[in-house]
Image (cartoon, rainbow, N blue to C red):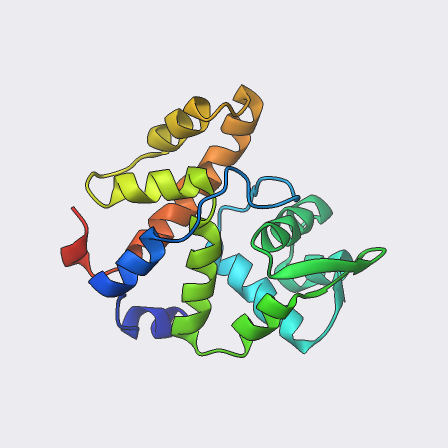
Length: 177
């Protein structure tokens, strides 16, 4: 997948404008704010679920995770509305998740970026990253200004920074800064 991403054409100005007109929500999910820094693992688990429903233990085995890590990544996928809990400890793709995994790589990336940028914290950091080099401290400040607790900021800002940095890498560099 990494080779595919490197060769994938970047999103252009028109596509950037589309992302910037998405509706924004302070917290677009009833699920916990994500604590899953590695977007590649988010994609791997999403694609693993293409083969059918799975349990947290199966995800643990697949990714060599602890149970806590598996739960963080499953919560991240639920936050993105790509996965839902079907029953006691069983996870499956949502209709959006199904559409995403059955799309080409570029569209999968687009689906994920769309869901990320519907959240106000991620969107504000993304917009800042279009004109300035961003850091984790920028994520901390935005989260603080939006009223997140110090504990949430401490534990979640690295995910915000990591996901937004990944989002920005998918755009033509001439559109950024």
